[in-house]
Structures are given as C-alpha cells and as structure tokens.
Length: 262
Image: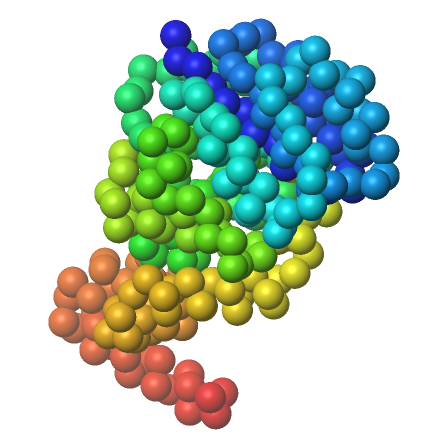
C-alpha cells in the first residue's frame, strides 16, 4: 500500500486551514502522513493546528519566504512514496478521494485528477505536451507526485505564483516523467489564492520561466503558436492536407482581413 505525504502550507488563513484539515482527516484511506507548514501566522491558525494536533505528523510555525519555500520545507520532511500539496483553503472533494486514487492500476510518476470550484480547465485528459502546458496548467492540488520526482525538481522560490507550473514543465517535458490522468474529482479549489487573482503577474512569471528553460529558437515557435487561436490550431492539420483547400482558405482569409482592415 502506497504511503502518501499530504503537505499543507498556511499563512493567516485559520478558517481555510480548518477546512483543509477536516477534509484530510475524514479520508477513508489512512496510509498517509500529514504535514503542516505555517509561515508564522498571527490570526489564530496556531490554535487550529493545536486543536487537531493528534492528527498531524509534523508541523512548524515560523516566518518564511513564501508559499514555495513552505512547500519545499514540507517536502524535505516528507517520507511517503507520493506527495500531495493540499494548501490552506483547498480541500479533498470527498472522503473517498485517496482510496480511489490509490486503487488505480498505474505506476506513473505523476497522477492527476480533476477539480471543482475553479473556471480554469483541467488539462491532461488528451495527453501532455509543451503546448498544452503553455496554454493551461496541470492541476497541482489534484496531483500526486512521486516524492523522488518532487525532490529532483524543488519549487523555485524566486517566483511568487508559477513555480508549480515550472515544476510540471521540468518534470513532464524536460525529465519526461510518466503521467496518468483520471476523471476522479480530487479537490475543491479555494479561488482566493494569489495565483487566481494576479493574472498579470502570472503572465509575466510564465514568460520568465520559459526564457529560463528554453532557448530563443524554441520561444519563437512558442510565441507563434500562442498567437493562433486554439480552435484554428486544432483543425489546421485537416485543412492543410489538400493543396486546393489550403489555397482557398488563404484567399478567404486575405479577403476577410482586407475587409476588417486588420
């Protein structure tokens, strides 16, 4: 039976923390350890931690450098075969989540389910590529990651909100780790997190990550692909199979662009 390390990072979110804790300790699957990393909260979070201390395997409360430093601290304490980051405010969707995940017939490095409560689409159902990662994101809270994979790619603490996205690019694209997608609903997402409210910062940090990981010749192709609407990109292979169809489409596009003066 696989052991899971559930890591929760919290800072001044006592109400959200209690919601997360309740969802963890209600699980039917019990082969897990529960780690809480608190960033030195002053809002009553410590009272919540102490209230449920008998269910927590390790906790610490001290000032730190942000969520990703907290996640790395938790990862260093983890002893499970897999790790899951269920940060404060988010919660497991039902009591049977872990039981369902660890009954799956897979030995993948990363297992990812789905979420509710967020407008962001789930990706992974149709496979993972650099393009799908650049146009979306693997659901981090709904993911179960082999601990040795997570340790090979610690979260980059210089970023505020995209280090989990960077992790998946490093692990799935560069390291070619195996991936398994399941329709199991894993997490109810708290939409108050900074990554859900700072869209401009998200865009700027994503661009910085790509420039860090890939040479300019790759980024040129990336920017070209990103300029094409996904609906057009999906049907383009079929449209370009016939030379006559391709020529007709190009002519129509030029006419439409001239009319619209684009």
